[in-house]
Image 1 (tube, helix red, strand yellow):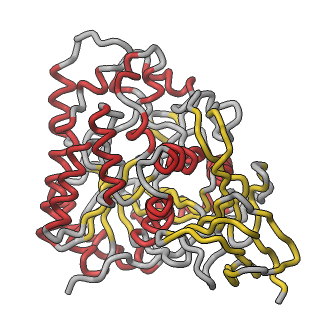
Image 2 (cartoon, rainbow, N blue to C red):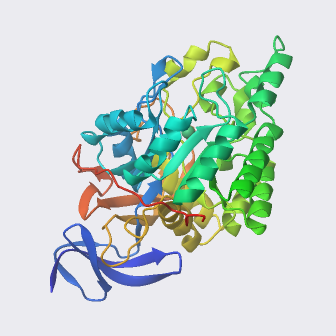
Image 3 (spheres, rainbow, N blue to C red):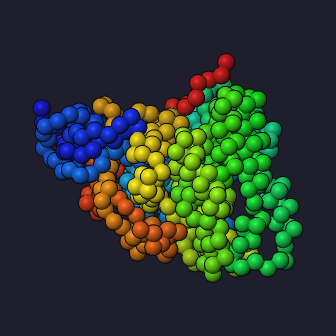
Length: 460
Ligand SMILES: [Zn+2]
């Protein structure tokens, strides 16, 4: 039988092993894995890794924030994603009070639909919990969005969820098998510490780190885990940054709490000494990048499977936008580019550096995100009959990261000058090449909204 496309002779990788095989595609789906397969077109993958496209579950394209809009819009952001071997991304539709969450979803889909080059979905961001939320909760899930986001901080912006709000959302989620994801930092502690260091001098924007020590994250995560335990709800911790928090997740999971956690390359590879530099504010995110000991704790958590997902929290602000902080660390537009370097950095620093095997990387970039966010096995797998989202990855490519060669609309990369081993060369989304030999060949608007299933079992 002649297939449409055969990727020949690569090392086909999944969480359970790596085997040499041909991978055949018909239309938009994976049709066969085997040997000596033939097709109308072929891609030679000898010496390359053939893997499911990476899924980045945490991005904010064209996000209005701090009086500006993040500079990677849906088109550039999704192109950057494809160039980096990401085939599906998740962004956020955040409720703008007094409008409903559903209205935010409709608006956000309208912004994304005609502009995305790869597949995508959205999380539903809740900024006000009341009886209207209880009513629209099942409707949002029905619309294919079974994962919610709430903020334990941003009280001043009117986004904060109280403990009672989080409790009620988790309880509601438990009924439907939905998941509540949290930005877990302590608003009270951060307010206090920011007040206490007012007027003190620090190099660069180092005050940002001083005002957000480890406890500002661990206190909030411990509280959230308790709420998940009490309600039986499924909890996800976005952008976890500390080694100590890994212990909290491990302990919670050991006593049966349905809790999951994500970290990102910046927390693993950058540390807070960078804030002391003149351009330190370029590295400003919240939670902030931390200490080398935190990096080690997070790497260990990934290797052990306690931290299940790598995601980038891409929210790109160029140096002009970042300069709006004007020396006040409380006014830094938080966020950095990252979706394009997710896979190369994870491979280079994770697999090539010997921190975990290739199989684990497939888990944390492909399989776990698909499972935890209700897209498995359609996304994140190379199983026959599923979407042909495939990356051909060259493990021998040597690349020095530079904003000049990246697609992101940004005049710096947080990983500028980092030498990586391995880079994706070809990216297919539903059978169609969107990147070929490291050149973008896709179409704007090709990406589809992916309706997702509730990831957890409903609690009776
Ligand atoms: Zn975020």
